[in-house]
Image (spheres, rainbow, N blue to C red):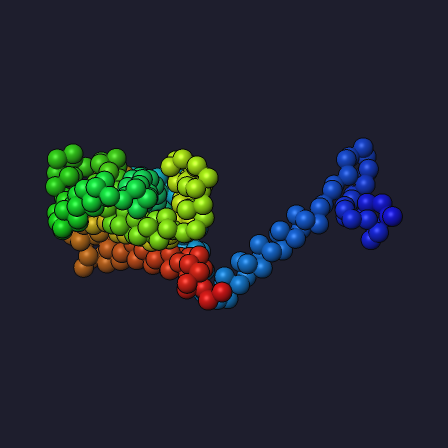
Length: 317
């Protein structure tokens, strides 16, 4: 039998570097290398088969990088006034121009990505938690509980969502937390129906019946059997819901119910100075609109691609 690193043994270990200057050898395990190659291969296949989904993923990654590293990416502060740079056209000094107060548009777009991404992720996270709790419990237990909860959801969905959101915002007032709560309630009601349908289909599976037969409790069945099997549906709903949440936040900011100033929001940039100075400085309205469109496009394309990949009925395997 051969030792480690030989073809005669069962365990292969490659040692690189050696003891140079007292340094410990670097051990590279073939299992880890195999996982890296498989991950790279899966990413390459995703790019080839879903080019729009890959483009959406690139946009989403760019938005997240802008949101996290806004201070390093933006050359100016989001409310910093530049002397003598009022309504300058896009150029080398200011890539996207400046607004009516002499603020750099590129910097405000970058900081606006932080607002939109924060609202989107917080809204979807809260909505998914509520929708998953309602959908799985209704689909699993059924009976009177399911009937009562679903009638409440039906009544909630019968109202136009914009009227509900505006009513909630009128009572609570503008603010980041209020925007998240008002949007999460609407998104949760829609997603709960989808998760409930997926749960009903899974709850009648053979392995769930076997778990009941051996005496597993309700909580164990939900956590070990139902939740993992509806996880793909939840991921798809969350990804698509991010685009809807960003678009809804922009609409609320456009109407004056979003994140209050001086924090930059793409919808508020369109509604305020962008609409007022649209003819004199069209870039003030064009760039926020382009940012909103790219964000919604990216999340929607990524959500559609993930649906095709994660849903076994659509991926053709």
